[in-house]
Image (tube, rainbow, N blue to C red; front, side, top):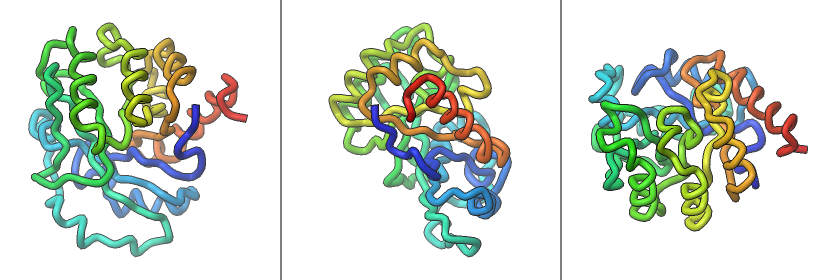
Length: 223
């Protein structure tokens, strides 16, 4: 099991500008530099998620092309946390019609996922088959959201087949929203993982990945 981003890099962060984070992009980037991060991705929720959850966007997403980091040397990318929508493998991976080079494939409970929860594993498999060349990694696959319906070993198999990393989501782990049995299976069998904060607050940006890495060391996955 290889960790794609073992250092000061975090590729799953939410902002106030475009989804449900508590801080603006500028605040996140400035603080990222203060705590020693070198590379980050602001990965806000997709348009279906925004619409279904009634988020109010503070900016138009096309403005990210005009945004520049004026605070520090942190390498900042913008991505999208895409959503699996149903058991047919349909996925929303845009914000206001704009997509990204960084796409996290995740699932979230109804009303965002509108399919049969019993068939969510089937939906994941179809989505990965269809969009594997666009997916950067699978977001929080060990979440408790659909734990009773997820066959984690089948997801690991298809992700390994297409060389798609899976995510150890540190906010979910710290906030006790992780199925630990599925997490251990993922860590034991997945070829590659990302270790990300999924930060919605500055405190999570600072703390949760460190706690996640400590867990990996304690369990023998890191030297």
